[in-house]
Amino acid sequence: MSSFTAMSFHLAPFIQFHALLVNLHVAIPLCAFSLFHVINASSLSALCLHLTMNRLSTFSLLLLLLPLLISAQCTCESDPEEQSSRTGATRYKLAAIFSILAASLIGVALPTLGKKIPALRPENDVFFAVKAFAAGVILATGFIHVLPDAFESLTSPCLGESPWGSFPFSGFVAMLSAIGTMMMDAFATGFYQRVQRSKAQPVKEDEEMQCENQDQVHGHPHGSGFVSGELGSPELVRHRVIAQVLELGIVVHSVIIGISLGASESPKTIKPLVAALSFHQFFEGMGLGGCISQAKFKSKAVAVMVVFFSLTTPVGIAVGMGISNIYDENSPKALVVEGVFNSASAGILIYMALVDLVAADFMSPRMQTNFKLQIAANILLLLGTACMSLLAKWA
Image 1 (spheres, rainbow, N blue to C red):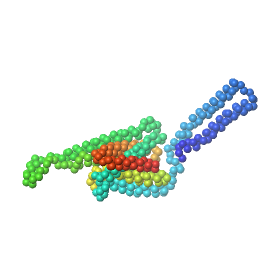
Image 2 (tube, rainbow, N blue to C red):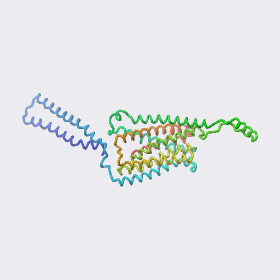
Image 3 (cartoon, rainbow, N blue to C red):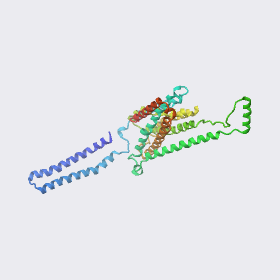
Image 4 (cartoon, rainbow, N blue to C red):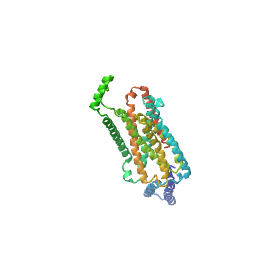
């Protein structure tokens, strides 16, 4: 039952009472008039004034009662109609753990299989097109899924008016998070580049002389006297920073939705979320997997990042199941923590999607010089945002 319907249901007796009062206020003076058949200008004016004052008094009474009726609908307790058996809820939660785990693992692992699937290698156009779709998914996740949840939590009537109702904390935290992500991005890139330069140590003079002598014997020059660092080009450094920061933003959001799902005791709520969150994690995993593939991490690092992303939501569900007896999603502490973390996650995802994924690829010379790839990437970007936005109907 919606809040408007519920409010109308509770207002119905008062509306009927108001109609009764109005009829009485009109009927009594008219009966008196019909009995005495005496009327003049002054009595007619008095009758009209009497009717007007009675209507105003009745309407004022309803205005005084209306805030009380509306506030009565704003309850911070769970709806008894939404409660169901724990057995049914637990069964759906276990199904959600395995379904989301499989979807996350497949989604994040597909783009990292470029060595075995040539079409998914970063140098191919198919990879660019898939990455554009994934960028649309991540952008829609930040704008459509995470940020509205943050606004809903931090503007809940279960929180006090001061300070949560007097300032837009959700947008403020998201803005600070985006700025912090930009700073982290810049400082991390600078740090990696300084490490690369420090590892490129000049060769000692005696080793240089030895190399020159060997060059004269073997007939090939060694060139510069600097040893290249392990990170390679600045572009590779950038991709590694992007992959790590993006995973941070996705993981924060994934843990929160996992805890919320695990703490729920309503099978009607959990059942549609199983399929919706499975697709949600699959699409997000594709975006993250594309960034991991471009970063060219070592196999062990790739495995750690893939497993870490895949386990976040299932672990969050398990934690939510463990605290379901004491967790109250409408408590002020839970609302504040969830709202702040969702706002921070939204800022990270929106920044990463727009700056490091969409802008970086769509403004690259490779995209600008290939018209077919440009059209395909734009279409897939819109398709990714549309698919993720559609999922907001259920999750």
